[in-house]
Each structure stands twice: as structure tokens, then as C-alpha cells.
Image (cartoon, rainbow, N blue to C red; front, side, top):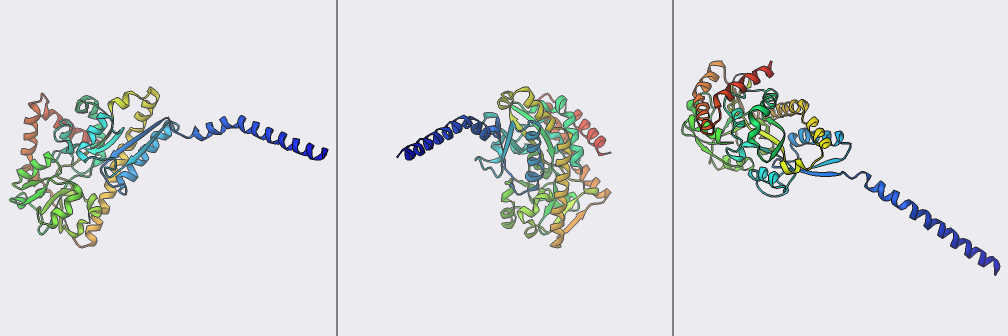
Length: 357
């Protein structure tokens, strides 16, 4: 009986020791569980498919760079395809109002909101080098562009490869080839380009382009080759036209931005880490990724025997002359807002030329 009692008390003692050890270690377990949790958990919202190279090869590496520079205090969850609701044109409002923390969007979706930055969308300002255009925008940002972005803290701006003319049933070789044709425009400056060539601009979202071509609502689109695989445009496009050495007829400007209130809520060391992540490396990477993706899109079209038209110097010059009124129209419009548009055009061209060398 005594042995039974001794054994019972020993078990009670062991249980008490085990529970005491657990209680002592519990705070350490809890601390270890939350040690990996970021102090600032941010969401980046955009309109593009998460499967696309811009998402995987530009946005994800940039987000990882921020996380690395902040030693994990910041985490960025990237949600593509308008997964948090709304339409692409709503993205800047979502950032300003705090519905989301960060956005990646096309400036042209917001009409004339980013008036100064539109200079880079004009035909024959950006030509064929997205890295050079990205670096030029960076150099001009503080002095010439920043005022466009009220309520936003811009992380970085970048360009697409630029708009080629892609058509169904005919080749675009000279300005008059678009006369009377219905054509999809990517932006208001793109609409001006088409109007100047006496085409009929038609605006539809990127995802609706295949149906629009299939129904013959348009027969030409202004679009980089980047989107061709995603949209399966080999089924709807027969000819693709670009100028000499890959010159394009305008471009789309993208921004990665944070809402200003969200930015102001971050401490100085976190802001400094973002600024470091927004440096030249990401501008070069964005341009290089876009260029490589463009080549993949073109390769798809060639695989299906679609005709790739590359204009010679004189043919390209004919388009440049025909489209000069687009630039003049833009200069006159921005002058009404007190902006020296001609100076912006000249500066943008000069800096793109410098960074192309």
C-alpha cells in the first residue's frame, strides 16, 4: 500500500514539474510563433493576370527586395486580375482612399489625370527602348512629373515596349492604310493618333480585344506583342507593323504607387527601404522583362505564319510626319493648364536619347 502511495505521489510530482515547465516555455513558444509575422502587411492590387511575366518577374522580385531590405518587417501580398474588386480605372482611387495599400496600373486608364507624364505616351517620344524611357522618367520625376500624383507616393514608373499596329486582313505600311478603319485605342493619346490617321478609335479593355476582333468591331489594335499569347491573338491578327529598328507609335506608362496616407504612416526607416528598392535596378529589370516578353509574343505570331512588317526609314519617317499634329495638340492642351508642353517633349526626347546610348 505504501508503495502504491509513493508511486502515486511521484506521478503527481512529475505532472506538476511538466506543467510548470510548459507554463514557463509558453511565452517563448508564442514569441517564436509570431517572430515571422511582418509588422507591416501590405497588399498590392493590379489588373493583369498573375501568370504574366510582369507579375512574376517584376512585381514579385520588387516585393521581395522590400521585404529583404526591411528584414521581414514588411510583407507585400500581390493580388492580380482585380481580385480585390473594381475595374482597372478604379485602382488609383483605391490607393488614395486606402482600400488597398499599393497598386500597379496603366496611367492611361485614368484619362487625363497624369497630364505631364503623358508626354512619354506621345508618338515618337518613346521609340523602342523601355529601359531608356524608364530612366528618363526617373530623371524627370521630381522636377517635372511629380505634381501629377497628388494623393499617391510613386514607387516607380515604367513603360511597355510600345504600341505596334496589329491588324486583321491587311498590313499597315503607310499612314493612309488606316483611313476609315475602326481601331482599338489604348488611351486618349492613342485615340488622337488614330484620329490623326483618319481611323475611327474604339476603346475596349484589353481582355475584350479577342471578342472585339472576332466580331469585326475593330480590324486594327494598338498593342505591344506582349499580350498576344495571353489573348491568343494568333487567332485574330494577320499582320503586325512596327517602324524601323522596332520603333513604336506610342506607349503605355505604368506606375507602382502607394496611397499617400499609407505612406505617411510608415516610419522613416521603412520609407528609406522602399526608396532603395525603387532604385535603378528595378527600372532596368522592368524594361528588360518587357523586351524579352515582347520577343516571346512576336515568336508566337511568327510560329503561326503571321506577317511581321518592319517599316524602313522613309516609311517610318512618313508616320512621324503624319503624327506630328498629335504632339502639337497635346502641347496646346497642357498649356491651358499652365504646363510648358514643348519643353517637356524636348526634355523627354533628350533624356531618352541619353539613356539609349
